[in-house]
Amino acid sequence: MKREYLLAFHSTHHAIAGEQILKEKDYPVGIIPTPREITASCGLSLRWDAEAIAAGKDEMLKLLQKKHVEWAGLYTRCREEGKNSLWTLAENAEKSLQGDDE
Image (cartoon, rainbow, N blue to C red; front, side):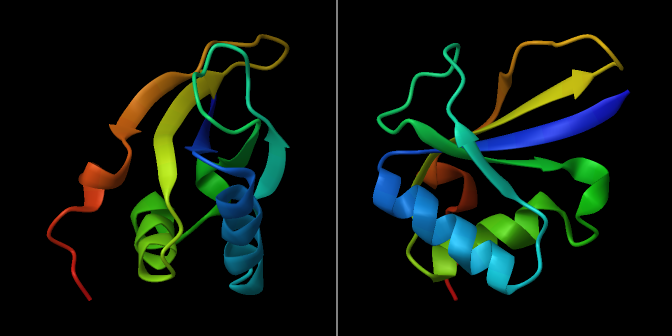
């Protein structure tokens, strides 16, 4: 099984800015259309494989927060080869990093 993450955004501006910031740090993220099962204000999301990112999602989210990129929610799913599964909410938006003032 392969774990994937998806970061949904409130606006296209934040989605594109988030992709640019993370790619500048060599994070292997891709921008994709937000899946229908996810309710977000923006039609774009970032997707990545959990094992492809050594630093982990927490470091990525802290970097986005530091750069003032707002996101709507972090979703996850586990995929088996040849099978799709639904995305489920892993962390709720801006409040997930409260107390990490840098």
